[in-house]
Structure formats: structure tokens, C-alpha cells
Image 1 (tube, one colour):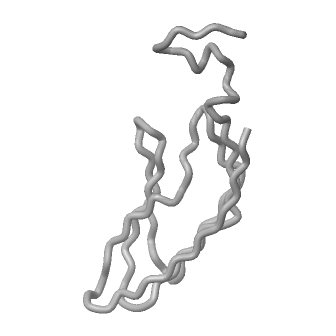
Image 2 (cartoon, rainbow, N blue to C red):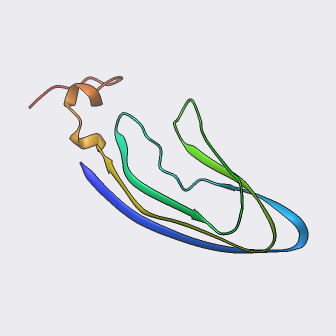
Length: 102
């Protein structure tokens, strides 16, 4: 198992339009081999967010609309545990090729 911890801080300035649309792919997916243990999202201002997951991959996307001016996003204190391919039982890794235990 691998444990990943990370934090992201992003800043943007919307200058030439009254509103800008953003799509972020910063949230880790929750799958059979990856579990999100903790996460925290902070968005500056009163910016509505829409977080959705792709049904085929479990990849999460966040869409938001920011008004004119500075806009900051902080995604931090995230930790995820990942069961790597090599730590899976041999029978789980061998789907399309012939494998045998040593």
C-alpha cells in the first residue's frame, strides 16, 4: 500500500469578463484500489461548486463559476491510500496473460 499526502494552492484573476467557468481535476478518485482518507477544499468568495464523478472511471471533476477579480482555491490535507498493482494478489493481476505463482 502507498500513502499519498498533498496540498494544492491555486490563484486566478478574472479580468476581461464578468464571469469565468473553471473545471478542475484535482480530487482523487475513490476506487476499489484507492481510498481517500481525508480531504479539505477551500474556495475564496461565494463561488458555487459542482463536484461530479465519471461513472466509468470514478474520476472526480469540480466545475465552478468565478466572478471578476481574484479567485483562490486551496485543496489540502488530502491523504489517500493506494493498493498498487504489485501489492495485489497474483490472481488479481493476471487477467489476460498466463501467470503462475513462484
